[in-house]
Length: 81
Image: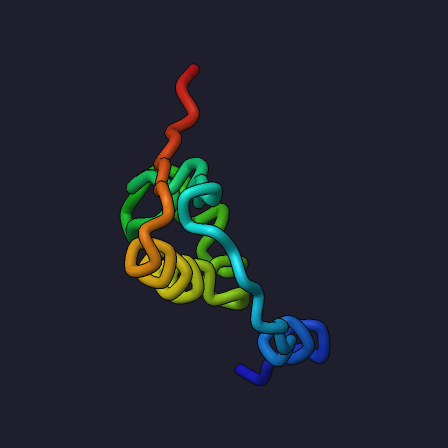
């Protein structure tokens, strides 16, 4: 399946090098739960196309690894009802 123009634009965005102070920086990951992110999860079908198009998990993992390596605080927050 060919990527749409919008998808190509999203995936080709260049980001500037950003300097942050790890002691003053946190990465907050909201709702990265198996129900959404894992095949077979109750809500996975609702988000899988969007997650694949934007490379949500791949990009999140890359950012998470960089933040951890830099010594930033990482917070995972589930949504609870």
